[in-house]
Image (cartoon, rainbow over all chains, first blue to last red; front, top):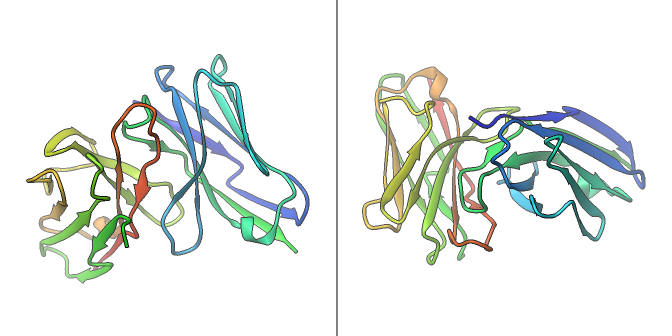
Length: 112
Length: 115
């Protein structure tokens, strides 16, 4: 079955700096890659997603890149703010409405 | 509130007891998913439904676990003979289940503590 790995497990950045989280997946049949943000004690919320026919997608300060050949995908957050502090999960799925396999998470701390 | 709801939000039980959780998805969503999340980990897939049909069950879901979605609306997850290792947050999510409509919306979760 699908396995998603994520690095780093923790990340601290100064406010205004960029943060990058990298993930790999194992199942070449996966073609939908969502990213979720989970604040302490709250439910996961989708922040951005990318499909396999797209190499890059951007939404304001957040961008995702996908290298399907290498089975790598990454999340980039620019101009980080304290409210970006949370746990971020990458995930993979065969379709947009199939089960989602999550990575172990990255705890991001943005230091004011 | 038109989002996904779960009940109860917290459940404390003794080892060996049975527990049942309920999930109410967003009304027009025909896909419903159950995940389990332990501290410091990502959500782990348990099972999912397309309307009332259970499409897949994870190997994590032992025979002590059963899930139903009898009328294709709300769903229940039952754990029989609970063990301390069952302590976790149980998350429910729903989606439209249509190509081109992507997002799974999560509920607030039910936190289970088995003593």
